[in-house]
Length: 466
Image (cartoon, rainbow, N blue to C red; front, top):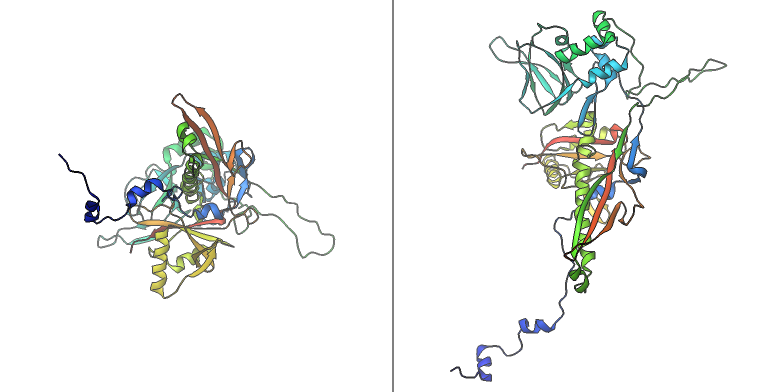
């Protein structure tokens, strides 16, 4: 039989007063709101000027742009889709006299895209040639055969260069060099069979292939835009030139994208456990934070409108030596006016800092929204963990000019939507199911547009390893 415990036994155990574990039963705890580790600064969402987009679409009209006579076939891109600008095909001797833009458009549609990694062989010497290859983006080195069996580099071909034109009309043509990718490349190929099939269907193309001749080159300014005829410095009643400003025939339209989720809250939780914090409010807050993170991720990486894919091919450059050097960022800045900020992965910013230390220079710091951030040449260098890092340890650095007035990059959203909770985001009640669970549809609508090609630049394949 257990003997009763005496008061002296408690004292013998060392406890002389009420313990904290028991006292906590009568106390009110101090609580924090739910914390979330994945919340980032989201500088891109904060720095982009947001444009009201009625009817869910935004059309970017531009002047018609192409430049003939430079020996290069210009390619363009819409998001991740890369294509040949049809009038640029007149750079090819075979198509120089084709005046029918519909025929050139049909030829452009028959190009197929191929992607190559550094070291991949595009063509091999002495092999049959049956296609025209056009370098849309990247660098390709051509190599011959030396006297001692080596392969000396003959030339370095970059954006807009092409080879294999003769293969389109000659069935016994062979490659007289080996072409190898020096950097990651996007190549557009026109097979001879597809070209000949089109020639058989088009009397215009067939006639021009039979009677090749030179033609005058359309006038253009230094940016490749169709020229506007003007007169200046004249005196008296001289005849003034007539002109008009030509626009792109098919301007790009951006439709608002959406990120959505269904938030579920049990009615018992919402009814009984709302003190000191509202359960629905906290659930919505964390859900919206996650939606905004996904929104920024899509603005960077979406293959249709994401900034990494929307950058013009001519505004994408490679690093000089691998890591991001001050010279690389200077080249990015030199390609556009009024650059407002860089956007880079935090590890890429750290790599840039190491390169600055190696060269004995030091980045500036500026205050932005109450935070101190690095800057180069006065342009803030903002961190964004949504910019991907490849398996080989490389990333990208973006720089941009923003705003409609500056013909820059803008964010797109629509305000005033039903059940709006925040600008461009709404929360809609979906009902209560037979398990007493309340459902809310949470939707965020957004997109981004690049108004002119030079508004956005990308430094690609930035090495970030130590």
